[in-house]
Image (cartoon, rainbow, N blue to C red; front, side, top):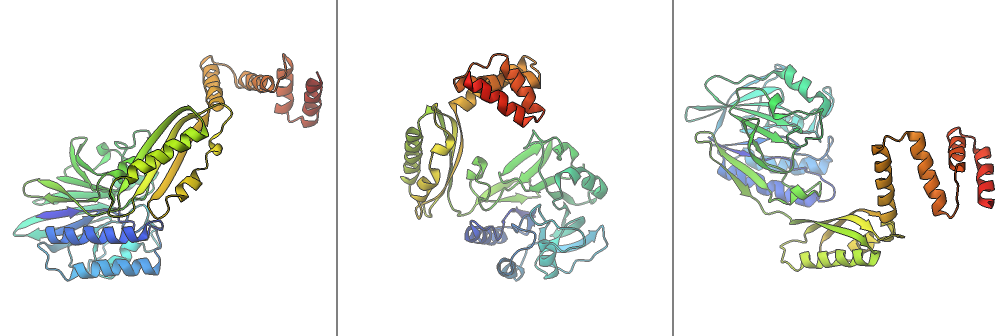
Length: 400
């Protein structure tokens, strides 16, 4: 059985709503032509309560798919809550983190399910069949990260004997976000499944995590403006009989990410480098105006702050030719030196009080004063919230 795995359409995404719609349509239509069934692991919509216009667009997308002659048929369905399945179209989905709502409230995937557009595999198992082959798809929709392990343990999904078993989820995985300790890892996933499919992560992945085969198709539209989203958009086509898979690209708006590093640069130098980078990107030919994300890192020359750069004006100059987003993570040399000084003092196990006194002493010196031991006295007055006494002591110091 050939399965198409596609995810994270983010229909209704405000900034690039037309891109989200057109690229979801391209992915769905191409996937339907190539596959016997579709798996969609969440975030079809960008919000929990889509606008009526967005819902109407989604209905139109799936309505045409329902009329197709599919290779696979729905042969069985069982859900933890005992609900039935009124859809015969082999399009299987779960809700994502953008769509999750309280149990008492219907989420957008349940709305599509009620309309007969797809099968909601949340806490359920769907059996597909083609030419005697059975494929079982079990799903867990997006939940808050800190609840994911408990939700997975409560669900306790089990493989179906005699079937090719797939577990589908929409969650962050610590294998991709190692700094987060409160999220799922590949080791937490239920055992015994032949393939794991995950949404939520916008960068595609085809390989093994914890020794388990996993496919993450990524998003079909750029929403986060991160470097990993510069990859080609599309979906995976997977053959359950052979294990063969391929990534099928779709036409999408180009996204270019660049990082510009500076060291003691003047605002003029930084702005010149930004314009140069934008000109270099736009010297290429694009079918559509591209999205360009420039990240500025490093430091500006002494006497200048990041606010010295008028990046909004520069971005506005390229209106119509590109969607320019500029992220300035620049710091002044003074700020960088101050951070280094704090780090050094902390490494010396200096107390918070001593650290505060040292910083106050440096600020007073920078203002042209010689505070001496008065810095400690001033710090203690400020710490005790004795504002009047602190103001009087500071006035005496300034007179001296």
